[in-house]
Length: 599
Image (cartoon, rainbow, N blue to C red; front, side):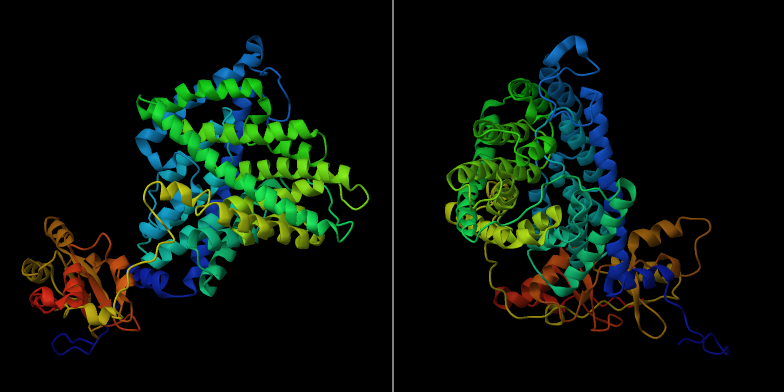
């Protein structure tokens, strides 16, 4: 409370913007709004991305999906015959190569490792332009014949959307990471019509944590995206898969063997992917922006030989599980997909490896099923059933995310009878993958950069932010004039000071730049109330790692430390104060040397 002369006391309200941002940052109920918003945005983005892929595929071929048609000419360039397959990847690369190189190099490749890296090492911060660049580049790549999937790009698009929303609202690091996971879950949900698989994908691969609050948020986001997707695209499944049944208990032994075999195939795909990428890196000596166009000639040659590799290839996958190919063709398609996807990524293409992994698993599983049915015709299901299980096993072996693999195949088929053989095969595939390789198809890309997500972090002392902080600079009352605030800031160690209300509650911070610009305006406000901005804060009980994460990018100014209720200012933390508490023997205790900056 403050008084003006003889007037009665009056309460100075906290600025609306500060209250709103504080609620978004600290309230559990705000997660509902944030998760739903990210889910809706990602759902719309997924629908738009799928339409964009169809648009570019029609532009090049004249068909919605070329992969299941065989070797036929483009409706737009009939005079070229099938030779248009040689030119389509080149033309697409000429367009998206410079765009990716200029605006968002992280949009190159299959996307999910970049999201994992952003969550683990960049506090969840993803450049906003990634959303648009990834959508355009991946749609052009797939529409122009790139043999990659659309799920990885949609995950990166959704994650970038979640990160952008969080950064625009200036949320803390924990919520930025959570909204990135919400975007990833929403992306999987919208593209597969799989609202259960989305959250498990986000928790198992992106957050790598199953905290209850996080799971609730990603579920909300996933459901919202699925509702948006179904409302705009209908309830039809994107894959038409056959029914499933287990004919004999003996089959479970075959499914276990299938899991081991397809687990080996999944690891082989991961190894081939990066071997081809290394070969492309070694061979290419020109500018990166031209690499997709020049490499497109190699991809076009492969498409001439095997046109079923054009684009994502779901029609070919459906034909396989429906029993329309013989063993030799199935193995040819499996190996062809491995090299076509690897080449697309290696030449600088943009697209995912999630769908190619399902494709490879379907081919391997169906081939296994044909052999099993010939050897044991009385006790085995049709070969297509093994193709379905093979899809999940390949996913489990390559990504080592068994929960996601089981849930997504269950949602794709909608049949409970698939659960037991699927779980057996996926667990065996994941175990086989673990024995054969320390890295997954996603983490291998990061490991090649020297990043190990599974490496243990160094032990840090059990200190809290309140222990790491120095006494806070004397705060500026929210009723202070610009001149008084300018005087206080001129004596401050940093270009920022905390602001408190009349009842000594923390209201935000004021920056020297804002005050200087306001003084230069003709209609400058009488007080600093309109200049107060909500800054990132640290709770008193935050540990050392959480404190350092919050400080990332703000080491020059430091951060306010608030009490448990996030209402009262109790200290100020900087990198210097943290180091002085962790290593007091290295010199004078700088934590107690922040200047007194009373206005």
